[in-house]
Image 1: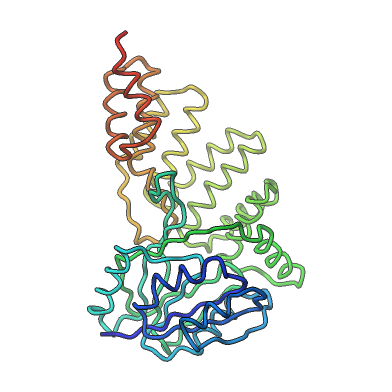
Image 2: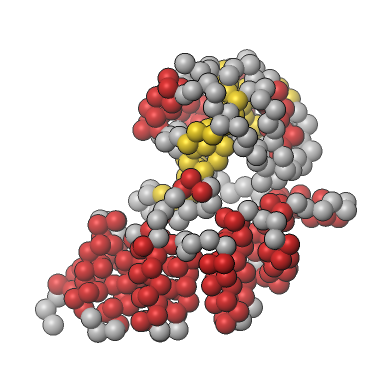
Length: 356
């Protein structure tokens, strides 16, 4: 059985750290906590679980802090978590099984990261992250923000997921501030960080700046295919905000130049036509979304609703407005099968069952 060091960087996490460590402490063989300047009870809580607590002055560099945490690890693999992450019970069981069965020749374990949820707790946004990294294998974190490790060697795709459960908002300006400081210092952002810089600008509603960054990123042609597709979608969102609907449509269609259709892009195209009451064309794209295979191993951002519920509930409305109530009701039932307690599907069901 392989051994695992849990390596965390923390700062003022008294509200969530105990919850996180309670969910994982009995699964790992060592816990390393690097504190970057807490002024609350974070260190006191961490001390209940480990004596390996180290200070590391914060310098606006997440990769540096994570590399520091890995430097203190002594087990076969390093596992990282944020303080507001947890392992749910089913994932705890899957993690135990992984430790028992993992081939020590594996260099990196990729695992789902669930970060978005609906009102019933179902996952609405997920992507895979490098979660366990072979210790002393020459891999390190890079990126002052949106930090990552470039996987190398043999990769294993695990079933256990990490669930991200925030209890409070983080500093909304931090990431943009770090990127802006790098640019002000004359640093050239490599493609991955150019992409994320564009996203930060988008989140701050700086539509024109974000659009410029995304289009430059795509024009350079050095981006990862999943980031390229996402950048096209964000170009479309920016174009819509700038009242350029036809250019938004072109940006969405551009996603197909990088790879086979993704359900997320098809749903966006369906939405574009739906908003213009072009229901037959909207139905085409929502139907295409249902044919797109979901492959989380590609590593891109995944919206699970786009592979079932969302196209079905939208097809229900499209066909209803096209006068095909029988087909509309059938798609509503498919949507309800995805989300039995969904208010929209329940409302539609009552509508269809009401005598004319």
